Length: 561
Image (cartoon, rainbow, N blue to C red; front, top):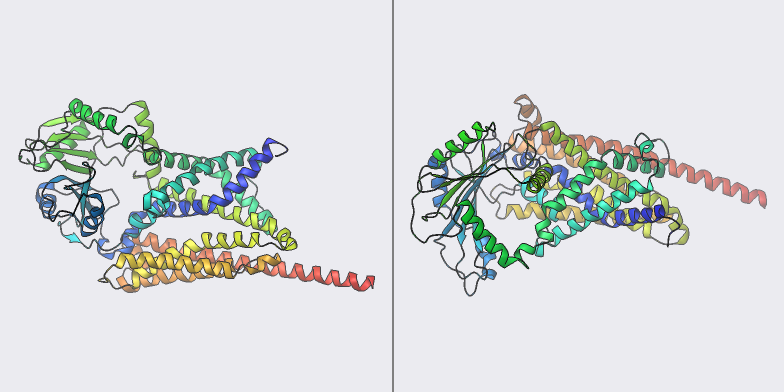
């Protein structure tokens, strides 16, 4: 089919990169935003704009909240299809209480698990959630969408397409093909080290785009490979769910054997039990961590089999001082506070898994490394975007002569994906500042604004890429860059007007979560202006060159006549 192996790799790189590049663009862009998802949450929900807090007292603050919690109405509605017959009116058996926080969270997320009567799956659980101010225990509105952690973050690995986990499968396939594209890209570029230092911005668009594509691809190659691979590792249980399908009986048996081995009860005893001071258990866990040279805060705390004689408390360390996602769990008997188990050192295989997971999820406290993650993700965006541009520039003249519109459609999808997602994200943040705080279904409105803005950007991309059919530059790119510039400034101004936390105030107070989001949007606007001006110059250069070519052709025709 091809003359040599290198041409085969070039074909794979081109077509796999083109077809799946639109998905990967979303993954890279919103993955970059997810590095600071908690900071975006604080920008979007002004009531959470205070300093991050440690895990509060369980006995004084958390326990009364847990006892007051119930399953959410949304989860009850969703559970109706998972039960035999009508759903129960009450859920008296509480399976678990849990609290989770990070070093970047000012608020605390709580969850409760309840037994679901008549469930088709006996292990099924009905969940309730609540967000509180950890300083007082006061409940915060749960109907406000946490745009960073609840929308942008899951968008980068699931496209927020939850039906049968289809979005996760699409992203997983794209990540797998990305590994193919990376390997084939290395093979086809024989002068890879020279291309690392080659960028000619003043050359014609096709040459400059290819240089930048090669440069960003080579510089961030280890980052791109590791993150594609670690993402596949994290979702390995979704892609290969053998433990809950083919091996389900063995999985259940293993859990029982593990419970017997660890001393952590697998099932409820059916006898009422008390709960001793959890604060004392937390203090003992922290003492044990400190004795091992791992002093730190609590990141995750659970009470399992609540109210039962077999109840036990698990305390996990935040672990922000290391990359590997290791909780160093310590488990206590709930009724007495007696130590049941201290998690042993991990096996070599488990250590590799926790390292890759922690490397991808970046729960560590290293701010410089977090910014390197952002730069790595954005370099992936640039690599994909310049790949699209090179594809179109290489083929648009040929397609114009042949009378086909393939290059135009690729350009339309490219502009809608590259600049369209930025427009959608900024429009969502603007909607967040304009929508009334007490609006019913406010989070749904914000999500609809995002998808609507993206759809409009796509329609605009289709409409304004018509010149590509004539081998000219599409004005859609520059126009959407100007839109980004305006929207970025508007979002920053609206934040200052509606909350009083304008940029001068947040900078003077050193409140970097909100100031950082504002500065990032202003930087995006500035880059968009520069890009729009550069695109205008390129378009003018193309028109001048086309005019000169037309004049030369006319002169030759006159001379020949």
